[in-house]
Image (cartoon, rainbow, N blue to C red):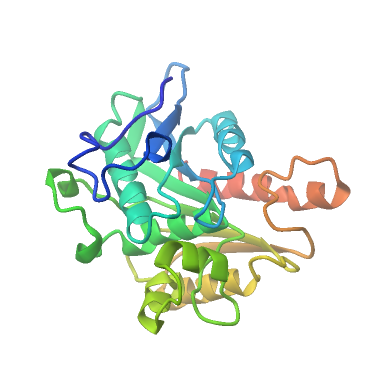
Length: 271
C-alpha cells in the first residue's frame, strides 16, 4: 500500500506546515489481508534520538506484529529540526486517523496501541500519558475522536529529562538547546503518568550505555503509583537499539525473548 499523508491538508491543517517533502510525516500501512477481523492494530514508532528514524525498528517490527495477527502502521513522525510538540501532534493525529479509518482497514477502533523504541518509545509514552492534555490538542474537528492508545509497548525507552538518567541528545533534539527546568519536566514522562494512562509493557537491558535502565525504572514506579497496569522485563546485558534482536549472537538471542513475553502480554490484553 502507498504511504498515507494523514494530515488532510498539509499546508493548512498541520501545526508546522511547509516542511520539505521528505520530512512530511506519513503512515506506512502493514494491515492484515486475511478474512476475518476486525484486527487489533499498533502504531509503530522507530527510535533515532528525534533526529533520525531507525529502519530496523520500522518495517521489521510491523512484520513481526503481522505474524501475531496484528495490523500495523509505521509512523514517520517529525524529527529535528522540528521541535516539541510537533512529534506529539503527529502521533496523536495518527492514532485518531487510524481510529476514524478503522473500518476501511478492517481494524478494531477499540484495540489501537503504540509500540516504540528508544526515542520512539518516549513518543509512545507521550501518547499514553498526554492524550488528554488540552494544551496539546490540535484544536480541529478530529479532536472529537479519542487520541488515547489502548496500550503502549516501550522498548529501551527514553523517559526522563532530569539530569543523571536523561538521554540528553533526545532531549535537546526535541526541546531545543539549553532546555529549561520546565522543558525538562515536560519531557519527563514519569511526571505525567495518571490513572487514565493505558497498560504499558516495558523492557530494557541493564547495561544499556546510551539510555540508562533507570528510565524504565522511573516509568514503572510512576505507573505503579498511579495504579496503572504494567509489565517490566530486564535483561542483564545487550547494547542499545537491538530492536527485534535478530542479529546472530547468543546474547542478542537471549534478549530476543522480549518478543515472546510481549506477544503473551498483548494476547492477555486482548490483542
